[in-house]
Length: 289
Image (cartoon, rainbow, N blue to C red):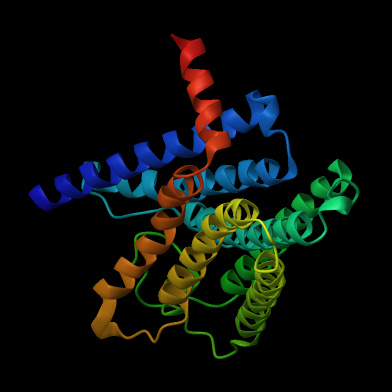
């Protein structure tokens, strides 16, 4: 009882902080006209995704801790699985687009306004969301087209593919295998694009004669690289590590880290040394007084 109460308090605190952080970024990038640039347009969508991601898992977990329940309806499980594929899938696309935005801004600054036009930004964001939605439909249909028998208990805080896969008694896994293979290929392709972008970025930055220019370029790129590293490392820890029935607790810990870390720390990483965000927040707080 005491442990469940502590978990409820901890999860509630994490959810509250993460919600406030991401809502703040969304509001600032909407209300402050100085932040109406492609970089902050993408950051706004990233923060909204993170807000949705943590809202998909933590509120239900908190409710279960408070009510001493550990159940979820079939429809709730389907929706949770769909969103836990759609949101990270869209986030992969958006952080890839953000790396391309930095590449154009630093390597081709004279063409930045033309290349990263409003229409182009909207199309890139739409493509990211559609990619995530496509994978959400693909994974959900593949997973729930299989037969389930025996136990209906999943050893996890939320419904995801690895946990549900352990309950299936189907002999044909081809649909889910194809879905996972496509998901890995998509993520790997995005990661390659990000790495290539930053190789080109750093090669350009190191050639800049001005120390101030190099410092400014690094200040916009390093936070994004930290976000990329956090996202992919937690994802690998949650889904690509070997699983076994003897390490159920470890699997649960990795999954919680994966669903909580990006939404909680991305706003901190982006805002810690970002003068534009800090200035916008200061103006907003002065007006609120």
